[in-house]
Image 1 (tube, rainbow, N blue to C red):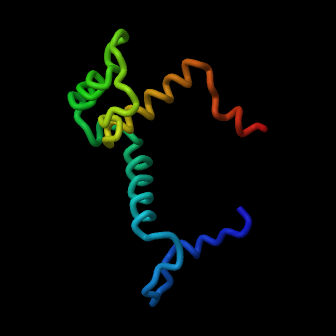
Image 2 (cartoon, rainbow, N blue to C red):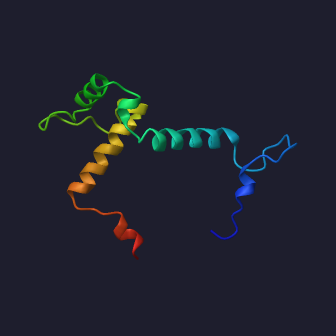
Length: 106
């Protein structure tokens, strides 16, 4: 990480203009990181179990013989849909034996 300066990402005291990336992006990223790391990323912190089960059933992931919703289905674009998709894809990769740490060794 040569050439990066963490000071560039924060407002300097007395400055009216941000000196780095858009403050809105940084605030949202920080909020997301806190929520994931402090609340352990548990989806049940945000959604009751019934809502998660219903979303899984609607997207075709609840029963083994269900037909999965296509990726262009708008339900995948909701906050809950994105979380479910991430978990689903991670589980599929684990079943295939994919290990992301193998990429770091090269």
